[in-house]
Length: 153
Image (cartoon, rainbow, N blue to C red; front, side):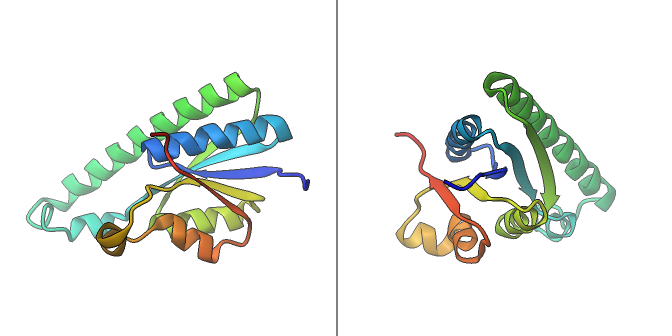
């Protein structure tokens, strides 16, 4: 088996991504790999134009986004630290702005990922049509293997 030096894990704090983190940590522990947790945030401009914030003060929206980013960073930091200590592996994290699939693909390319691990919500039918699938988009365009993980029932 080829050496997996860098494992990218897409994190959206759902049950699916929690399962993906667990699977990635098992891989990393067995193969002595490094993990980078990647979380995507929608851009400020997309929120600023949404009907919820349309009549709000834009500085309030920016402050809210900054607080959100700090909160997500704290969550990722806690997960990374716990994972690293528990499994004796190197874990770091990255928060980037953009659509989830674009962020995952961009970071995987930038970090020269050997594999991307991500959860899949398993939507089908109308839900899949309306919501789309981040995992599907990543699978189609990734320059490395992608391991998709379904949540436990």
